Image (cartoon, rainbow, N blue to C red; front, side, top):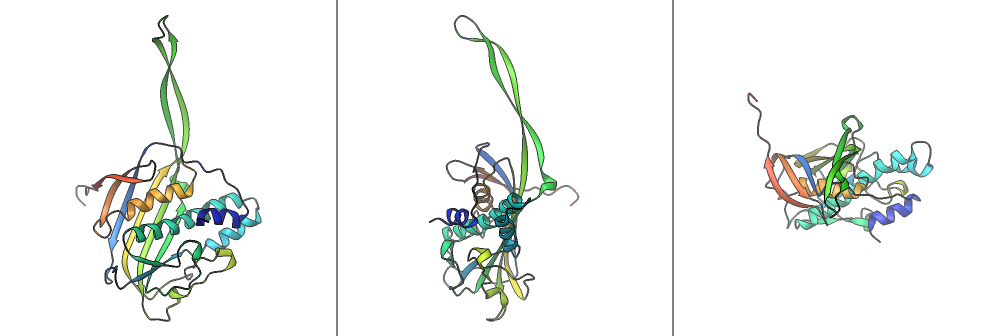
Length: 259
């Protein structure tokens, strides 16, 4: 069973997944190279680890209190970020362990990918989409008058961050898979991870009215990991959304005058 479907069952919840919206999305990314040795396809093994707040979000979602739906959605952003980070690394040809529903910390990584994702309500905004429809036609069926229609949408702002690191020392807590029943057997990052060198930090965001966390993170991770490790710096990445995200063009951000 695919991980997303398994997690829906484990949560004991149901969700209407919608991915409506435009066929093209824009994702601003900011990718920065660190000071550690570059990631190797032959000598490195990567484990993707989720942020420390996931177990608490799942606990609140399962309790189904007044904020259960918010906690559920927040957890799904993190879970989707992990899954698609694994997918992108594997597609690029890197060795990734403890993946999908087979997670549990049995692998032996020497590189950790810390992933985070969350909605930022402070950046939500409303947009009005308009279109015209014929209101009158002549005897031949040709439109002679038009009405303008409009629908208001709330655009959510979703952030994604991945930090690819080399922990120092074989006994570093970052190598310990702190999985629990509340993490659905996934490896959880320490509360305050430290003692490591950074290979790469990638961030991306998306403004959308889509409600499916997997759909959204599929787009953002596609943009952030596009052409890794060559696309460092700030870029505007445009993706065509159907049937799967596909990068159609990349535009480097132009520095502002005086900066």
